[in-house]
Length: 573
Ligand SMILES: Cc1cn([C@@H]2O[C@H](COP(=O)(O)OP(=O)(O)OP(=O)(O)O)[C@@H](O)[C@H]2O)c(=O)[nH]c1=O
Image (cartoon, rainbow, N blue to C red; front, side):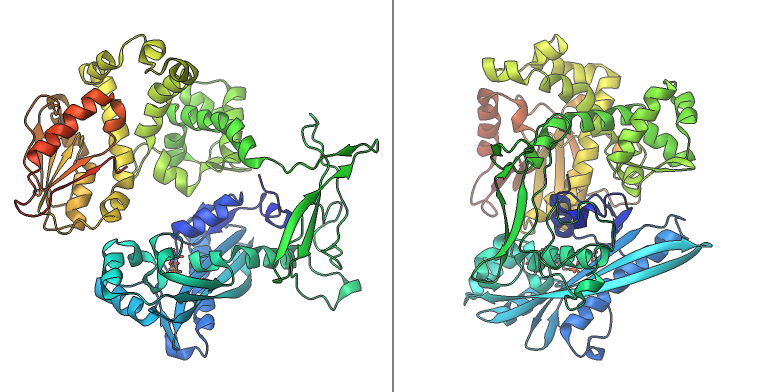
């Protein structure tokens, strides 16, 4: 749900975020923006000395990132986006620009420079509006920057190194993340917090307001918006026609939907003593003059209410392998897809439209085609495909969750209701039926493979020489661990039926020797020796008594003081 009319202007547009930063993605997703992520290939190597101020460097880099994506999508993929957003965050201290550290020493150098001092964080943003005319790409570029001042406390060497070893600094400008552990280093922040995190949302909205609702000719002095217009500001006004003379006082608007769910509301913007603009709702009268209490649209609740429909649309489209068909043959018309997959035309068309509105597909006059995300994550053959996990969610988790109410009332697992079998028997089924086993292993592999890099780098495991991934299935996490920690050897321990089927999932072109597979039952057999034990997506499957057995066994093989203090990273996913 997009509450703000300026962001609402982007709803019907094909918006692309030219950034790999998960923080930017989260900030924009949190306000309801729908967009595709196409990380830029632009190398951040502009000559810093050629810029007179640090923010100019950030703005130019943001612009180049967005331009690269706009051009690449137009030329290579023959798909011109409507809007491309690029951003670049830098830290500036003593006239120096700090970007992301290249290694731990570099992170130390950066953090030492920031220690006990105030510095500036600049994020440059470029918004590019694209049009394709006679196959030529035409672009309107808007850019801006935001500055936030941040002061670090005096920090000890020990604390700096502890922070560096957490791994957090490595993908962050200046070597810290204010939104997580790095927040503990900060004494104060003056300005927009989200700007430090990576995206100046407030300034971005104001910029969009300027672009989509420029000040009218009656009010030429007011060049820029200094507040974000509220929902009702532009009602009945077309683009570029709005009166923007007074955003501190706005008319109320009745926003009853067809079912009468929402009452009238007015959102006023006001300025508080510190110059910060705030929005609040006030009661209004309805058409009958009856006072109603104001109600903000409960977007989170509405999202939760409808979430299951969206999930099921994704599951069904995946099960019908629609994303595979479109990857190979798109764009395709609904009737052709229905013929290929053997479904009704009207039902298929509705499903395809649902997927398009969920941002999974694109719909053009030529037909439906996959978005980049669908090609990467939803087609079943991709390196990072989530197809296996989606099918597992549909066939296994969905029936279990429909019995959640009974689970809560009875305090017990619901496998008997969902599948007519007890959990233990069902677990045996996983491995007795080749088809169920394959589905389960694909599911575990797809989610483990996708998250493995984040898990492997969430902890500094460089001190460990050997690890044992208990229930490590196809070895997806193990292979990532040995990539990140070249001195580590990992034993994957799982049931014989699993180990016998792992060859299909092994990475090609990677040195696989540091990963070995051992079969056994971790409840019954002795566990391989290791410095570190990993239990990932395991403990939640078992009742407390069984978990106790398993953890006691791990604890028995962990002998503190042999090489180093032995540790268990449990339930890390
Ligand atoms: C100071 C600070 C920075 N960051 C992150 O630092 C990266 C900057 O690098 P970038 O070059 O602007 O972006 P990127 O991550 O390389 O992505 P891309 O846009 O593809 O270049 C961005 O991620 C930001 O969130 C935080 O998460 N928290 C903080 O407190």
